[in-house]
Image (cartoon, rainbow, N blue to C red; front, side, top):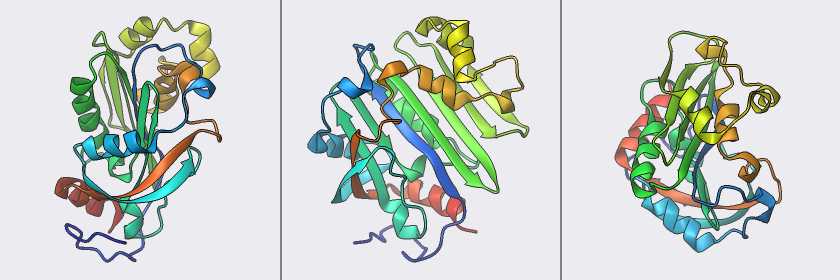
Amino acid sequence: MSDDKYWTSAPDRMLRGSMGLCHLTVFEPPFTVDARDLPPQDAARARAFAESLEGIEEVLEDLGPRSVQTPLPSDVRADLDVAHAAAWGNMLSIADPAFATDGNDEPLRSAAGELRERFPDARIVGRVAYHGGMEHTEDVVWLPDGAMFHASGWYGEDPFVVTGDPGAVIASLGLKSWMLDNAGVDLDEEANEVEWARLAGLALGRSDPWGWEQMQTTAFRVRHSESAVRNMEQLYFV
């Protein structure tokens, strides 16, 4: 099944570039649960969460369970209609190719802002990497007390834009210097050399589900919004 409502590219057209991390997570209190102790995947809640996002108009098909370590498919245009969504108790998460960017827009920040309004008591954490010759990253953390940072740009290149206050996020999370050192996060480096995704991971701490093969998501074929499709066509095709 493929949905061509907004696409101008054929379903079998080969993609340019590929995705690495592509996650956006809503983490509500309590914040101390170990990821391995989270409840099992609730596919119905995951579907409802996916359909509630601004970039997705409708879930068209349930493609079944996937490990969180299963990468999003990224060979042909039809693959861009597949998202992996999860609902584990007090945590909701989605991996969606529509979050990727090369710097011409900020889809992750836009989605995070919308979720921040809907879930004011949650930690909103997003990590996205797009590989197109070089690596473009976009990472965001938004905490209940308002502390946030958003970092976006080509790794090792300028301009690399950081907004918000990473220091305020670190202080709000109570992160110690040894925690940053262990994660390989050094804010004294140039912004385009900082491992922002690792800092974002520290906002989830032991609750971060994305490293555990046994954690399950559900793959869905979706119809993205027209604006999401337009952005993906500009990104993934020459």
